[in-house]
Image 1 (cartoon, rainbow, N blue to C red):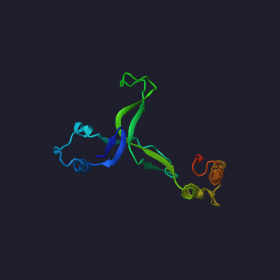
Image 2 (cartoon, helix red, strand yellow):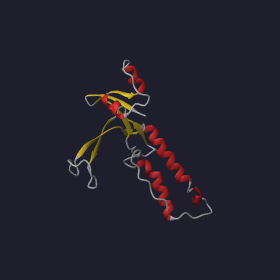
Image 3 (tube, one colour):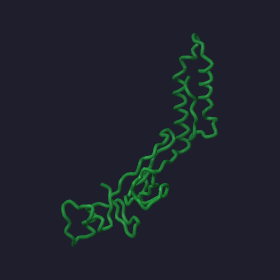
Length: 165
């Protein structure tokens, strides 16, 4: 269970534990199971993980944010609540969430990963380049497109892979 202690709507301490609550309030007797109402009265809230974004694993990674934030959503046409918010407007849900950020891997690692993947794709068609078989034009074009991957403007972070024939 992730908790955050806030002050004036801002993060004061994260992560925060029930042990921290007891230590911060030594003259207070808390029940064994501390409910949400008690936590809220001390400006302590549960933190839920936000939706983890997808990334291109070969050249990117997902990093958890350092601090949680109040969840902000955009009202959709099928949302019933909140009634006082118009469709398309943003609103705070009241929940605290910990988000994620997609970051690019270092350039040299990304280049090596893309080249390695390209080499594996080339190897998977090497058998078609043997002297006792005739390679089709489509396979020849495919293999050349794989070799040209490193010449693409977006290399290594935005590679368009050719379709295998």
